[in-house]
Every structure is written in structure tokens, then in C-alpha cells.
Image (tube, rainbow, N blue to C red; front, side, top):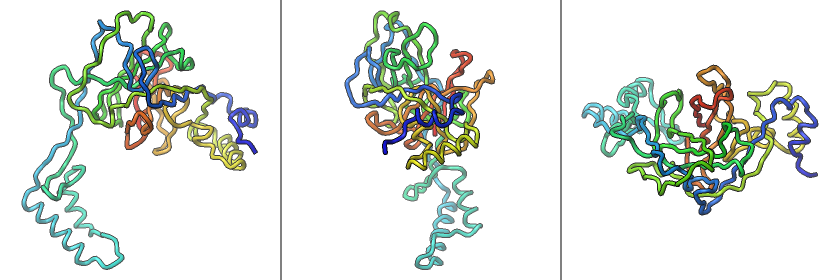
Length: 321
């Protein structure tokens, strides 16, 4: 029996009609893209007379704090006591008092270096001067991804980011990751093209994409359970299971580098992404980890960029899943 496709699902369940979205799976693969190509990590069609964007948001940096002698001795005593009372096959168990003491010593730090006996925490560091230049991540021409939502008069979308972590940058509550900037252009009006972009002095390698070209394919994308009527989702899920499939990530919220479509909520509960104007935002782009671009966002997750459907001039919202 052939694998059912989405058109069969839609024919079986007409209630999906209002939820159908066109998406484009970008499918990046290693290559040598040029300035006029759609790409991940390739050169951008950037006007020579336009300043290159720099990041002005505080970066997260590691700070080390030496433990006081009494703190080190207490931590070592707790470790020794736990080892002494532990029996073969038993787990490493702290008493409530020991756990409270270790928590007090850590004081919110992310880790403890037990060689140097230093707490290690990440703190925001203000930008000095102009700030580090942003890094080209994505360039999409309308001729390659015609279904991508873009302002009238533009046929080119460019995405750049700061290759450092940021904690809740301006307008991005509950977000930890690179700061993103989008540029829309009319490619025919660019004129003289800038040379190689400036390179930041300090960058996290996981945020520096390897150059890739696209093999785009347009698909129908459907939402996952959280954004569907319960009865419709359960019926579709049962229909898919009868055919040896899972609804999620086969018909709903297709994974990978994607333009448009629906976001998945496979790690957290559903979160409504709303614009400052009150409109429910729509998924614009999904940046994936791994593969030929060799990126790693959110511990091999997905960075999603949401756009206001009412006014593309409103700031985008970012989310990592």
C-alpha cells in the first residue's frame, strides 16, 4: 500500500480547509552560492552604500567566582558524607539540608568547577562601541520561494544574526539565542554590491553557518494538536495511525529549514506568539540545527521567526523550540 499524502487527508477531513498553509522546505545542502543566489551562509546581495548592521544588545558571557574557603570545605564534606553512606546499587542522594546548602553555595550559577573551585555563571555584558557585525545566515529570492510572504515591491529576504547568545533582548521575552535582523529588498534596485562583510572578533562557532544552496520544494503544511479542534485532530490522528503513520511531523508542522507553514510545539506547551499590536503572528521562517549548515540553536532545536500579518513593519518575534 502506498503512503497516503496530504491531499488524501484533506479529502477525508474537509474541516482542515481553514488550517491549510503553503510552506516551502528549503532543504539546504553544501555548495558555493553566489551573491545572486538563494543560500544559507552565502554572500548577500548587499548595497555597497548601505551600512552593515551591528549588534547593540548585551551579550551573555561567562563569569567565574572563587568559592570562599568555608564554601569549598562544606561542599567537599557533603560529597564525602554522601559517598560514605551510599550503598552498592543506590543512587546519589542528598538530604534536604545538604541540597539547600549546595543551592546556597551555587547562588544561581550554572555550574561549579571543582578543580578551580569556582562558580560559573552567564551574565549580560553591555556592548562597547559600535558592537560586533552581524553574520549572514539566510538569503531567499522570490523566484526560488514564491510562496514566502513579503512586503509589496520586494523580491528578496535576508536574515542576519549576532553569533552570540542573548537573554531576553529588546522585545523578545522568554527568548535566549542570537539576535536576528531581517532586510527586505527589491533585488533589481541594489546597484553596486558590497564586498565581503566584516567579520566579528568573537563568535560562537555554532552560530556560523557553512555555505549551502537550496533545493526548495513547496508543500502543504498543517498545524499540530494545540492549534486544531480536538475532535478534528483525534480523527486525523486515528486515520494516520491506521496507515502506519504519525500525524505530527508527517502532515503537521513539517520539520527542517522552512519558509512559512506552521510551528511545532514539540518541547513545550503551545505558546501564542502575539504582536505588540495584538495580532496573532504567523510563522515566517524556521532555522534548523544540524545538517550541512552545521548550526546548533537551542541545543539542536529550531529557531522560528514570527511576523505580524497586519503590518510587516512591526518587529518580528523569535522563539526556539
